[in-house]
Amino acid sequence: MRLILYLILVAILCPFTVVDFAGAEVKPPAEGGVLPAIVLHVPDTPELQQYLGLSGKKNFTIPEIEAEVVLIEIFSMY
Image 1 (spheres, rainbow, N blue to C red):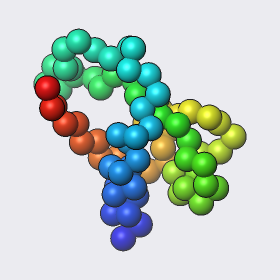
Image 2 (cartoon, helix red, strand yellow):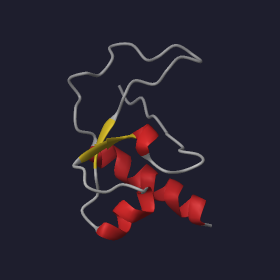
Image 3 (cartoon, rainbow, N blue to C red):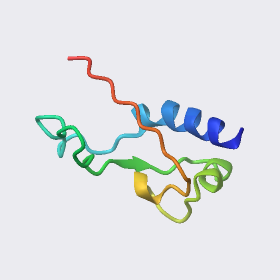
Image 4 (spheres, rainbow, N blue to C red):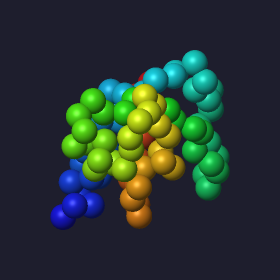
C-alpha cells in the first residue's frame, strides 16, 4: 500500500516540480537508453520529505529517492 501511495505521489508532483528545462534533450533517449538527469524541488512539508527519504536539500534527483521502484510516466504532447 505504501508503494502505491508513493507512486501516486510521485506521479502527481513530478510535472509541477521540474526545475530546469534548459538542459532538456531535443530528441528522446533511445529505447533502452539512459534517462537524462531530472532535478526536482524537495517538497515543503516534512512528512513528504521523510516519505521520500530526503532532508536538508532544496533539490534532488530521481536516484536519491529511497525506494525499491520509482515509476516515471512521460507524456509527449507536442
